[in-house]
Image 1 (cartoon, rainbow, N blue to C red):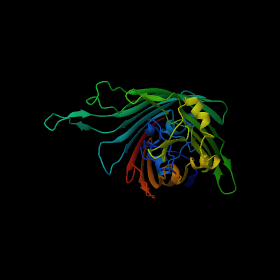
Image 2: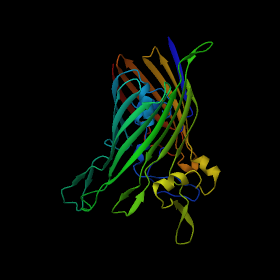
Image 3: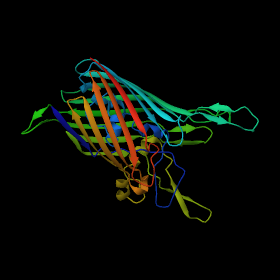
Image 4: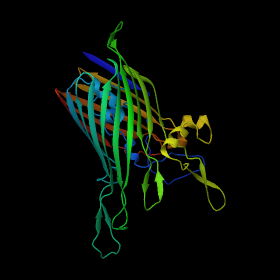
Length: 368
């Protein structure tokens, strides 16, 4: 039996810290941007989308409400993503997920995500013995999911965030930045229906992720928004309409040089709840700029006998909001209760992704 499933138009925003500004570009930046990186190879191979695709062990990142629709009793998923692999070999994102189906109506899940910036040797004088530093960031979260009907579920997630990117050997007073966040998610999956030439079902999903206070690094004296994000998606064998918007204020306060020329923009200094609501209408150029803050992804997946999959996807972002554009490729293999997925990324714009030419791995074991 051949199954064809195409996933298209799910929107994802990936943000990276940047100190580069121009008069026309207003790229939104946040603390802990690694939270927006797709960690699992299946979603990565589909143009980085997953809010309304079929549930799997890595649903924690995209939409935890999907877990209760899984057939297996429980499962564990592990993924590894090299980062900046063309430049260094020890910067990476690692992720482990676990889910457990309590009964027909409820489930719980948890995950740990770790981002390492690699080992750094610090020398204050050439003759000194170097200090070895390993700046890193991580999150630990847990979700509870409840079916409100046979076809609709909702989930709530609590998350602890820690960012330790300061160098202790340079400043003994340096400390990590911490915060907490909440996700609210929902997922609808219809019963399978027979059509003239095939069977199909509908899916809808949403996830408001990383609702929480800003993070503050004491040495900088500035608070930074965490990447509060809205994901919306719908599907019928393929994702046909979805959207995702970062719920963080647009950079709108001009930064002037000594000649009073605009060289960039800062975000408004508001709390995270005000920033959430302001994000829908604070772009300096109005609604047209708000639309530019939405990114698009397209993806197709072909599966054979539920044991082998081929995937391709495309991700696109507006030129003034980051200009990231790339094509993704992926494949997957299933042997009884084991799944192995791989994905690969190629940039198609002048802004090269840090994941360029990176092979990502995901491993899943499902318990019956």
